[in-house]
Image (tube, rainbow, N blue to C red):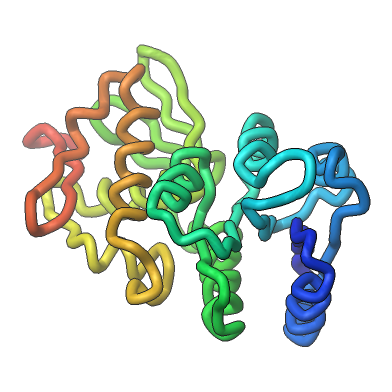
Length: 230
């Protein structure tokens, strides 16, 4: 049974979401002290975090940053704020998705299911290691290593890289990436994928690999490989 940590200070909304998630057989945990969210996260050790932006004491961005400093657990923001910078900020901080309030519960559960399926099952039937541009890409551990060093990716970043290097030197469309990442791209801003790809490139910069994730304007992205490489 998956454990979901719901960081929401609206008691009525918290109870509504909790009751609906319980119907889907998820364990749901709330927050006792909004000043100690990171500590309670460690105690709960959830499989997924749902977090509002506007919270008492510190906002959701603060806690997302704290969680990301030591965990790659998937994070989905829930927010009534509709400014595009909020979504961009959440993705830059390492969130996996963003759901705008008010929302249909069917949309939320679809995003939760897609995220859990991707994070905990996506590599089950795939080889755990791939070589790309002289680097070792470890799907399960979310680590990329070459002679320049090693970097750890988030689940979404690794998922994007995996899709690209499994089809080296071929364009993978933005629509295909978005549908694979979030199940139904109609609920996702096109900018969300751009932010995730830009984060991936930034992570790969110290290894000298960022230039080999190419943008094909109006089409999608491509991971390039030297001719003759496996």
